[in-house]
Length: 401
View (cartoon, rainbow, N blue to C red):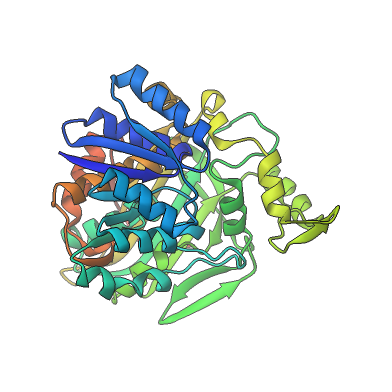
């Protein structure tokens, strides 16, 4: 049994804490810290009412390393679970190093002033974590996270070499809003408005945002338009699977969503460059975030399903094989269980699983790591046990798009 500190009190955090409370034999004590103390109070009450499990809560500005260190020192957790904003990753990791505590997150570091995410800043802390016999696990969400595990699992059990990787992320849900994002609007919009990028034959190829569109028939959802994007797990997967010839990431968007996004871009509301408004400097995207629906408020009315998975082609016994591994998650069922929609659920459950593997020492190695660098079997087993069952299909031939 272990003590953990969760930083961040959004939808993903709520799911992760609900799932930890369901496993109170493993998670002995849970503390939750966030700048938004009211969100902490809401999660605290939900968990008490559902599971009769008490969590401690604290107000915390995770940008402040000293303040974060003090909270860590107060609760003395074995693991800090960072479910806050990607801008805060490095500061929270520094606090963990200061207090000799293991670390886990679901999204890699991103500078506030540049819409760019990259693992290099966190990977550079590898030696310092090793020296202190600490483990840092990066990207323990769904994508990144489960998609990394799927890749490792397919390589271990189905293929001798993996040559072509496509990650497909479809949210077929309907929340009834004219325009809303299913997770933090600021992070979501920064992510999808940056240039596309994919890996092919040893090079990274860039293009305009959302400029390549393909229709795909998703299991349990049907045909949806998906768009080529760049996503952080491609960086680590290309690094850790050196037989890859091509790696791409695709995400679905409806026409209405894209129309609204184009208008917001055209009028400057997605910009991250500060502007002066009545002698106050504001960032337009941060203002937009405040007036858009809170993703946590969407769960009750969201219907439909998500489907996220990997299609991988490669060689087995010198013959070409193609494997599709995916999960389908129902928004309504997620809300019935933990009062969150499936987008938060599919990230919060893997955050709990990664934490469980660390505190039980099932996965443990000093340093800073991505999920595909560990044995995928325990993670896959827990996905099936804790609400995200996978399906593995052998396709007749490689995909052609």
